[in-house]
Length: 257
Ligand SMILES: Nc1nc2c(ncn2[C@@H]2O[C@H](COP(=O)(O)OP(=O)(O)OP(=O)(O)O)[C@@H](O)[C@H]2O)c(=O)[nH]1
Ligand SMILES: [Mg+2]
Image (cartoon, rainbow, N blue to C red; front, side, top):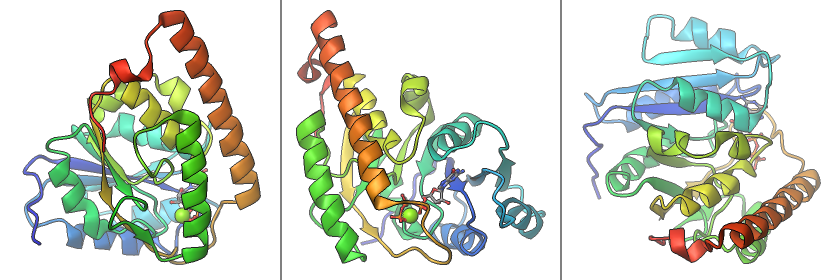
């Protein structure tokens, strides 16, 4: 199936920490995935990686104004970098993805295409057609996502994917301070607040690949612990705020995936 990319320009946000072995390949892959003539920029939001990711990007793409390296040296962190990238983005439409080559740029046109209709389009490993090359982690993630869904009553099946497109202003209207902190759990907070704000959310199948070069920054046990704590915090916040405002999730959930 051939999909036409939206004629609207978009900003791709790539948070990086020690991704010198992947970032150039990723930028090139994004370029090849996007049809010629499409207006776009790529923001590499680097947290002062010791492996020189920032300098590599700045040097390699010094003659290419569409690649914008951003160096962060204070208040570092994955979720905060994504927020920073969204705030710095020049275009109304944003695409957020990991920089370790697990999120395949070939799927960007499809995300953008569906993004013509929905406020947030999330690349999902767990809806029909979605998958993950790393089968062991697929099973752990799948089971953990079931738990998250039960706990938070989210409408999407993949609450931790982090590969998505959205309209920039619809994300920035959400309470950023309550969403963008910590690690990958920011994504279920984002989906929750988006759902609650009445944004339309849909999942499209996505195939998550293996990391390219380098090593993961995730420690699975620590991640499960911190994500569960974050989910319980969010749940208690939901209970408190729904009690006090009498506005349950159904009243702000117009669309489902
Ligand atoms: N800017 C910034 N990026 C980060 C930070 N930590 C991780 N990243 C980036 O966030 C993305 C996800 O990190 P990974 O280490 O792949 O972790 P993960 O995807 O949760 O875990 P895996 O399943 O092991 O790949 C990668 O692009 C990292 O370079 C950080 O503190 N700051
Ligand atoms: Mg990864």
